[in-house]
Amino acid sequence: MDITTSDFAVAPHQHEEGQVTKAIEHYTSQVPSGTYLSLAVGSLGLSLALRLLGQKHAANFVGQWVPTILILGLYNKVVKVEGSE
Image: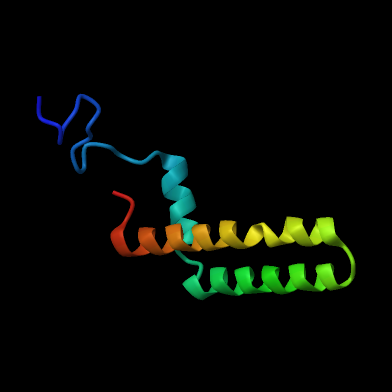
């Protein structure tokens, strides 16, 4: 048995994205990459401000947005560079 392939392997261009995925990627690809970084830094600042105002739970909630926004920005960048198919 070859360990580099399996019954579940998908050859390049064998799998096609769904229509919803294509539509989402079409619209999100129009968003500049810097927008995601700006949103992440803004969320970090808002979290810090909430923390300084004594809103610990709200600060933690907003602070958890940062990695999510950065991951969305990374996905957006990969789709722009590599394409989805």
